[in-house]
Image (tube, rainbow, N blue to C red; front, side, top):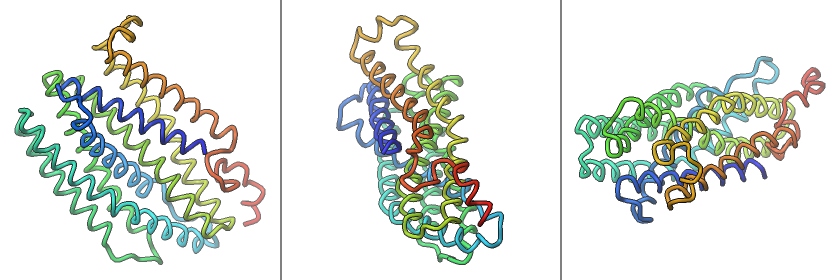
Length: 304
């Protein structure tokens, strides 16, 4: 339950953030913000899920567990593709829409050109991953494509940051770096959370066994270690981006609609941090016993 709450909170907070950013471009209507949000949320799905697929999925240390790990990983990748086939078209359509929209808003040509190349490269890599021949005996070979996609999407995060920073702040280096880190951190957190909720848990439920629980809990622990860096980074970069608009004066937060939006986002972040802290304490990260905290499995693991 708590991971779904966190995912809902970050989704709402992301829409508020997109709405605020589009308002700085004099394009803060719902009709203008929704396509941009769909672009960034599909970007987040792709970069975060491929981070999990490429970095957190690993073979078993014990040979006796390897057949269970392989079956679980194959099931996870199959579930991933079921969602991916809907998200990839959304990403392509909204990315192309933003490409032409920001080109008309006079974003520099090199940014537009780089984004065109990246959209093409990401599309080819994602479609290859989606329709590739599946090797159920050795699914780990798919990790290289996932890592390639993460690299391409990090660059795409830079371009999407450049869209906003060139229009709002003239393309200054410091705001561009902060915006890039913020978008990438958001994507890694959001997509990783989607993998945990909608891919890991359903896959493990179908083939529950001690080695599968070990595999899933190890993956979740790797994600939680990453989140200890990603979540503070997301918060700090968000506060840095808000500073030019409200400074250090708390009264500014209630003096305008923009300030109220920032206050709303801060409140959502507080809820998100609370969920992140309490989730492991309550063993609420997964409905499958043992997945939330790998230490709970220590006696059983020694027998496996």
